[in-house]
Length: 402
Image (tube, one colour):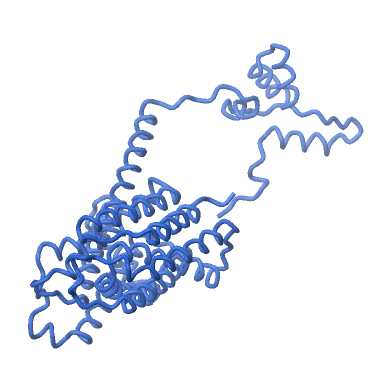
């Protein structure tokens, strides 16, 4: 809760207001702060003057307050504080490098496992369920450490938020279901689009998130951000128009639909934008921590994921099994996708939105370069220009408002 302006007043300013109200005839515009500064210019010790004045007026001014008023010595950081700051800086850049690796590797590995020849294909919906399960387990572990690794406190915490406040938990059912749909759409998109094209096109989620932030939460975006959204739209349009020329030679013999892939990307971006803003709105009106909310999200994601999986692919699962087509590569994709959310949370904690946007931009470049070597992706001038516009848009949008 924000404090009132009166709470920010210092004792010296309160004193000045009292003197003005008690003696209007001898009104003096000079403040104790002015006297201290003039004495300091004359070579008098400012701290001594401030202490003498405090004795004369009968109040005690803390030394720290005097330092703030007269610009005295600022306490130097202790070795422990310097060490903590150094550790945070290291964690920040480690997390950013990990985020770049996660963003780039996830797309490349998803594309690889969906386009492998002569390999049994797993069911997309089962992979989404496994991903939601891993997310749920990871958040349960984080919350366990949040309550000081106490099992009884952990159980009480979960019971309080999941059972006693069940109606509050129901609020996340909507974004949970939408995230399940989004993750299924991502598999369809990456199956039909080259990895680099998908990575660039998926940045439309910035545009959709901005639209839903304005319409659902009344947020304002500045001119620079509008310009970045325009650049983003132009860049993605150029990449999509050039999609027929920027192809992967390694998957030319496979049956793919660029229209289906791009349609899946658009739907995934809109679902991502809506679910993200909806979830943010829930978080702002809740006392639950981010990780507790993610447990609620993962719980409903698991339930709705299982329901949609058996509704859509029930016969196939009963015939071939839930884990048909799974191998270490498929489990790697699921693990990287599940832990990606935790990684973003770490980046937000130790870095800022600018570095997060920079990491996203770098991952686009890394994906394109890696796709050139892994999938023999043809990088054209049009693709390069469109990608450059998208990278510029991502970075500009992430800059703080002045």
